[in-house]
Length: 64
Image 1 (tube, rainbow, N blue to C red):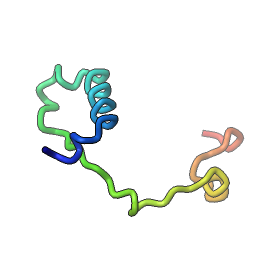
Image 2: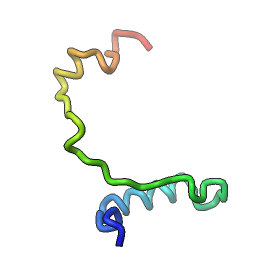
Image 3: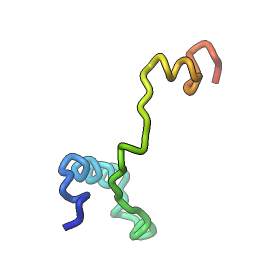
């Protein structure tokens, strides 16, 4: 069994997305997607003050 299928919440969320986007209705999407588990050790999490200091997301007064 593929390891990703053991992640019950991930599978439920993926099934909801597939249903909501009607991906099974269009044959053009067949074989187009791949589900992979990410290694969280490769990423860094930033708190709100770090995001604000780095200006990653524009504030409400910064314009569009």
